[in-house]
Amino acid sequence: MKCNRPQGRFLLFSLLGLFLSNPSVAAPDFDKLQNKAFGTKKTKGLQHLNALWAAAYSLKSWEFPIHPKSSLKKPAPIVVTLDGKKWVLAFTDGKRLQALLKKQGWANKKSPGLFLSMTPLKGKLWLERLGKLGIHGVRFNEGKYGWFSPIVQLEPIYKHLKRLKLIKK
Image (cartoon, rainbow, N blue to C red; front, top):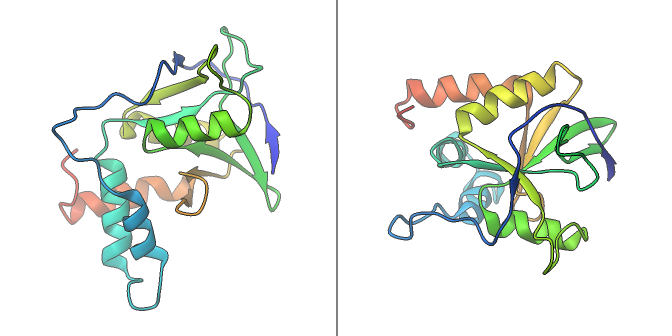
């Protein structure tokens, strides 16, 4: 994986611990959702893919790690190159985000790492702008239970889920 640093102005947050959410609302189990959507022949199917994306679009926010060498004036998202295509990394929760930041050495006890957090709709719009700058897609929860989409598919996925009334936004 090669890391790139696109430029741009974005809202920047410091990760001060794990992602804060309403503890009374159970978060979707993205590992199970992803496994059903992409797992065995028995579970693969559009209904499971719809459930995975509906859960992602129903989140309070998407979390995007920020490159540790970017400046406060020009924070840059983490971009990886796979198969010659550029991808932005995104996470559904702070635990997964924090794990990546620590694994890469971008977070420690003194510096918990940087990220930007935005609603899924704002995240989709931001990613669409990055698409015009040459970013191919977004990779959610990079790792064993991760999934991805080309940026040009985010709007059709969103409209499809709205048409099925799987999301309210």
